[in-house]
Length: 130
Image (tube, rainbow, N blue to C red; front, side):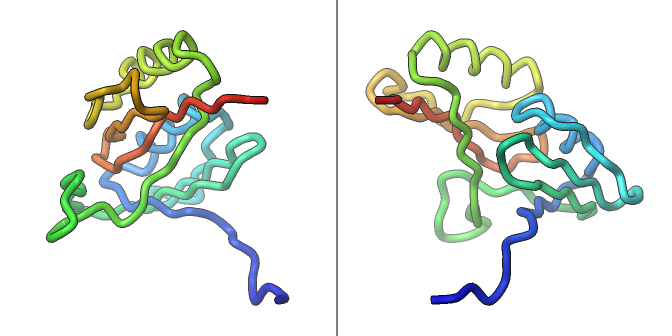
């Protein structure tokens, strides 16, 4: 089936687009480009374009709720294929300002769940490469 349109970017609402774009640049690479005080774009090398839009008074999702104020989407990042790479990525995202949301049974699951500085959930995933 032919596409109707091409995905342009994933947009995250946040109180401070410049700060959140800087967080994701530290996580996924790239250089944030501010279009104005309310909109910042980040092209992650080899990945998607993320945009950050100012949303004063934003209430962060309550992970893992599904009844009210639930997450509406989350981003998954490949953090490597070994537990050592996962542990190193864990330390780096904490240093960038991430907050762990779910580290239970982290050795049994191939992902770890965090919140970015604005409260959006994201995952670091361990991907086994053949």
